[in-house]
Amino acid sequence: MSVKDNLDQVFSHYVRQLYASHAGRVRCSTCVVSRHWSEMTCGHFMKRGFLMLRWVVENAAPQCGVCNGHEEAQRPARIEDKMAKWLDARYGEGTAARMREIFGQATEGQGSMSEDEMRLLLRAFREKMRAEGMALPGDCVPLP
Image 1: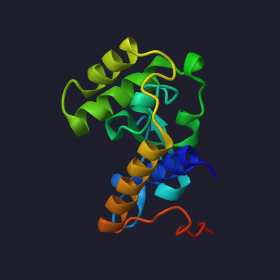
Image 2: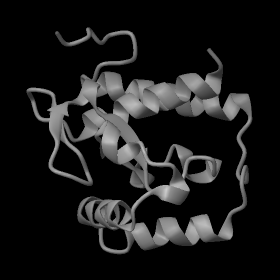
Image 3: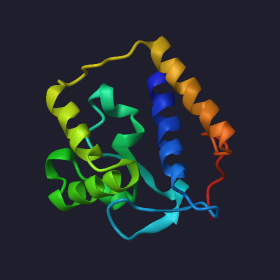
């Protein structure tokens, strides 16, 4: 597995567990679905092809597979609007607008990172997860 894929996996685990209850349940940021965090996905407000936002926690939220399964061009505006409200409620008014502004100024692939930078970010997320008692990829046991 590449460093980038490993970082994606760890980041996804982090975001989905960040808002989970003690029982491990988390609610989709864009609908009413509530499931164990391991059954949810990590949705990105602004698409993750823009590396400068790909691993920014304020650009990501837990989502069910249905809400996160839309291609960017086909994603209903209501899903984007609901995620914007969710992000603003958690990180402060204007968070979604800041993500849109960064996205609007970026070009695909901009803000690329070296493998060493990705390794540092990966290490930081892993350490944060261990400190907060979160499950790392590979620690998870599939639910029955």
